[in-house]
Length: 252
Ligand code: 13P
Image (cartoon, rainbow, N blue to C red; front, side, top):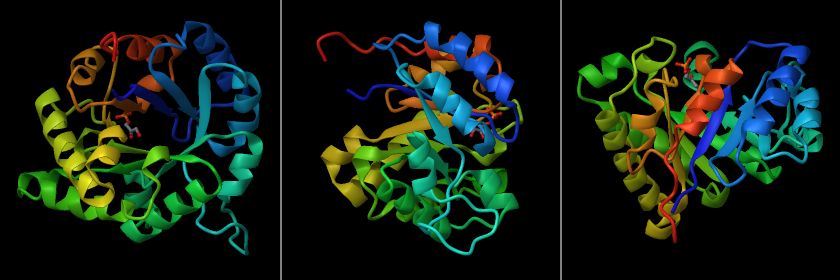
C-alpha cells in the first residue's frame, strides 16, 4: 500500500516569518502515522524552514534545482547545496517552469537525476494543456513527458499529474479524470521500471486542490497524494487537506 504524500508548493510566495509561523502551527497538527507531508517554500526560506521542521514529521523541499553539481551558472542552485541545508525533496519540471522558463523534458530529466544523485527525493511534474486535452492528446503527452523519468531511481521518486488547465484556475480535474490519468501514468512507469516498482511510486494530483475537493480526489485508488499550490499557503486549509486523506486499510 502506498502511503499518501501531501506536498505544499508555495511558488513565489512567503517570507521567513510566514514560513516559520506556518510550520510552527502545522507540525503539531501532523499525525506521524498519517500522510507524509512536504513543504516547498522559495529557496531563501529553506534554511529557516529546515530549522523549524527538523525532528518533526514535516519534510522540506525546494521548487527546482540545477543539473550540475556546481559551475558558472549565475542565479542557479545546485542539488548538493539543497542537500547540505537539510532539504529532502525537490519539485522538478513544474508546468510554470516549462511554460515560463524554457524547461523541457530533457532539462527536467537532468535536474531530477542530479537531485537524486545528491540524495534528494524528486516530485516530477507533468500534465497536458487544455488544448492538448481538447485535441485528444492527453495520453500521448503524458507518455512523452514520462519518458523523461527513464533512468531515475523509483524509490525516491513521486510523479505529480498537474493538468495545466487546472493549475491556479479553480477548475479541478474530476476524480475520474485524475484516476484515469494516474492509471495511465502508472502503466508508463511500469514500462520504465517494471510492475512492482511502478506499484510503489506515488502519483500525486495537482491543480486547484482545496479542502472541499481533496477527499474525493484522494479516495481514488491511484491518487496517492496531492501537490497543493494556493491552498497550501494557509495552515488551516493545508492541514484540512492533509486530514482529508483516507486512512490506509488496516493490516496492509
Ligand atoms: P494550485 O493548487 O494553486 O492550482 O497550484 C497547483 C500547482 O501548481 C501545484 O504545484
